[in-house]
Image (cartoon, rainbow, N blue to C red; front, side, top):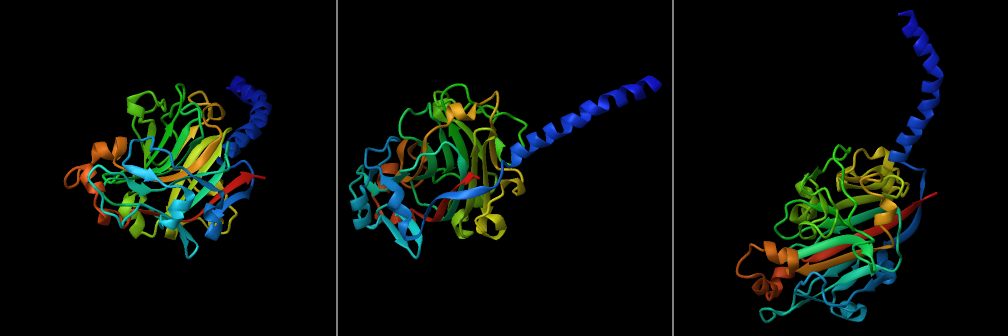
Length: 325
């Protein structure tokens, strides 16, 4: 007994010196200092720092992405009462198999880290729709990674947050997150499982589609810190943290995120996620929505009907990007 007491006394200096290290580790997992607003996309100037993508849709969707000039002249890009609107054409009936006009924009700025706050009033809904709010590099996909913050198709019931990377990056089980991961889809390797990546399902139906819209949309936050990892949260309007509304965000007070891919042996964040642009788009059918389409007739027939797309619109109040002070 005495020898045990002497051993504890001998170890006390070591335990005391280790405590600050543990607290520092905990601090890094929650917050690495205060944040300052770096970039803001909102109001009448929302589109000023976005480029309009007008190449063929890489996901084989039945859309024709419009140039900036055409998107505005056709009413597919606009700012209404300080809310940015990105829409699919809902006025032209088409021949079956024809492409419908749509919009895809990407930020001029490129990011390697940050605290991103997405205030989304509503998301596109309607048959065959496949909307996404995401980020990736301008080239070198998937080596520079992809982060899907909001993505799904008409048949989805909840939002799917997904990372896509080169081989060697994966989710790890046992993390403090509230979403659901599939242990068969832990690898983010885009060459596996038909590029399903490493998804985390938000278990709340208010995270997607008509339910999201009827609740007044919501706010999503993404903390991308190469030393910590990538975390994503979501809140409905009545539960948004006050520090977000006051533009003084403090992630350490937000509780567990829905999705968390930690920096570490399973994924070196700085190596796998680089030079990302923020991207917002709406495609129709394509490799995902076309494969899961369960509506009347064929996917191509649905795209031809203009009235299917009256509500196929993104309405975004703001996107704010903060960086550590």
